[in-house]
Image 1 (cartoon, rainbow, N blue to C red):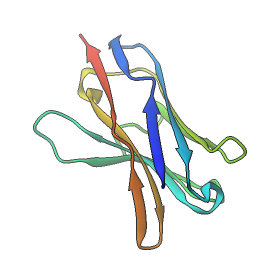
Image 2 (image 1 turned 45 degrees about the vertical axis):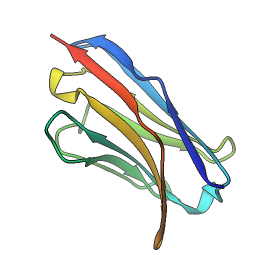
Image 3 (image 1 turned 90 degrees about the vertical axis):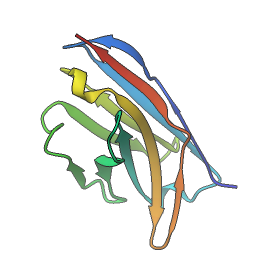
Image 4 (image 1 turned 90 degrees about the horizontal axis):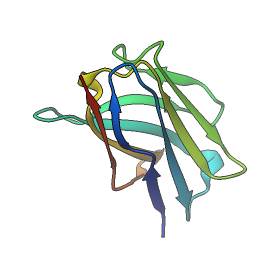
Length: 115
């Protein structure tokens, strides 16, 4: 069974940093596109960043220059380094694995950025 488990969320002050991790199992990790999504209060779930099997990255405009997505195929891990955090970054962050029509989601981890 495919499983994605997020960790690293928490409470941080504006301007601070946080590193999220996603551990994958039961997945051919090296062939899936990985991504981080988030859903803030009263908002729809949105793509934060994605990274392909070849390492190409894509970021939402709101996080460009502040967040960095990476993956370690040898460890079946994906990361999101978040810097210069803003209150509007407050959301539940989810990791996602996608391969063609197949996809899997983690349970999410809460990130709260205080003013």
